[in-house]
Image (cartoon, rainbow, N blue to C red; front, side, top):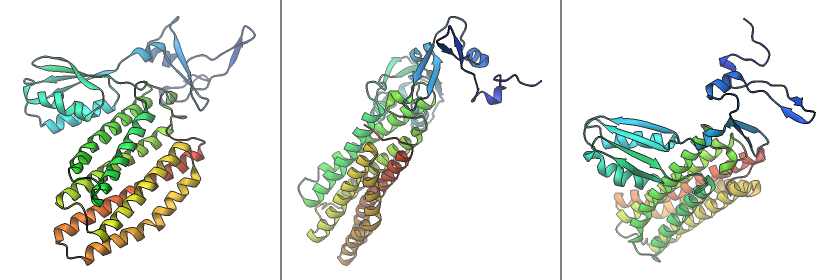
Length: 356
């Protein structure tokens, strides 16, 4: 049997054509596909919500969907490693579920600390709201209106920046070595904002929120933002490596000549990070190009100078490894800044700008 015009088969549900009609002389109407109405459990008299996106497109969804809080469940087998349980739980958090019910084949006691301390420490807004011997219920109590994507990304950026800034102050002797532990701990907060940002982007792709609600112009921008926040998360990892390596050196205040070169490399990386973030936020392609050129032209020289100082001194093999890790990580921060600058250029092609 052939399909009627506008009545497409299941394999074509993602694209349905409808002709605009006029009723009453001034009201424009478009009919809804019957299959979509059935799948959405709608009937005559029900309401749908129309959302005008920043790119001019129109999103249609059941009016009740905004009030829905998607739920899921998981079962933890006896003697299952806590690392597995943590990964399974985080995957459900990232998928955008608001309520996660956890059932245990045995009692909850072995995992009590995991859900009381570890998970809330890694995920923003997750709290255990109900619990018994064999199950517990966790909910995500923060939403896009309280902590939008733009704010989460901005906070992650600021934390990464200050992590590197403070590490350089330790190298120069302006801050004490005790600051290094604090820098390492701050990476956990970067990870929390990263996971929370990914959660929002997944909610967007699932149709639970619209691009305009989190400040995006188009649904297609979600991939760009996903790469952006991942770059920040990786920078946080490298800032953490710098702090851990300096701590393992026992004497994080470096020999004057080497210290000056390392600080110069770090300051250059910080400036590139600042400029790349600004170019992404403002859609400044000229600044983005300058960041990329600087990474390609200036950074190799600074890295080479630092490595020469390291290899020319009487350091032990362990000290050389740790110092090279510091230099390599600072260089990687600059390279990720170039990646962010490239994203700014890509965004400008589509007429968009980055975070607010």
